[in-house]
Length: 106
Length: 106
DNA sequence: TAACGACATAGCTAACTTGTTATGACCAGG
DNA sequence: CCTGGTCATAACAAGTTAGCTATGTCGTTA
Image (cartoon, rainbow over all chains, first blue to last red; front, side, top):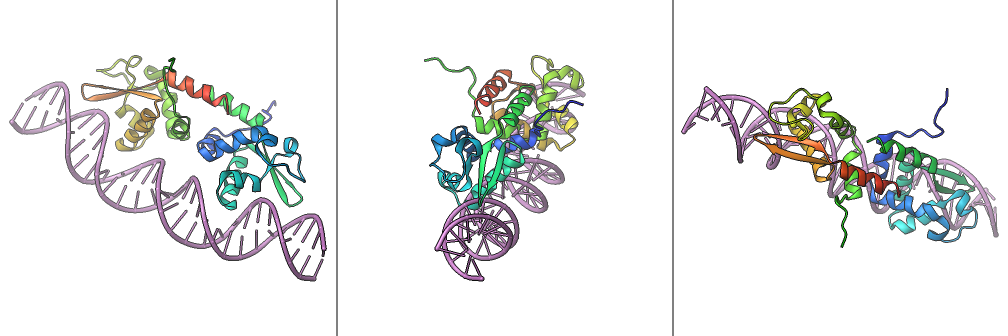
């Protein structure tokens, strides 16, 4: 049977975005090249921004940023790409679109 | 200057709806007449459902339901109508529409 | 005026969130 | 093989949330 490409748990996704930090991160990830310094090992558009840069922009400790990213990844709203020691994060626009679609019914 | 009719604080509204209880309540309030017993003093459509009926359907204590309603009211998503001892709650569809509009930009 | 019913608030507890520092796993380079 | 850099996890503290019981407020009614 036909299945939606991305499956979003509404409550989990809402909790993920009900945070100024994570809303900010999602916004930054809209344009990685513009919002983060150049990276050596990952393409900004294809792979996203690494955790260290997100940490710096957030102004929190590295583990704090790491956990924010984990919340977003587990909600399916962000995709993590481990790549030779770094982990790059980018938006999952399919999931974000499905979230908006579910919210339309509220 | 032109001002939006309803003002919604995105973070506060997201926290308000990032709860299965409150999502459930908002859904019930879509059709008060269908989801709640008949009321003597308030019109279901015009005024909404009283706290006691919401309490019963939620299956929690009366103060717990009362506080959930307070969260929704303070976020602007629900309107409270005190009326001769009872308080009736109904959806604020303008605010909900504005919330969805803000979410479209995420 | 006294009693009752609906709702809000206060006070408490348990669970979750978010920050921290310390540490472990893992990969590249010397 | 050892070192250094990146990220994740562990352990802890502080604040918030969500439930409960008990109590207070207020309007209606007997």
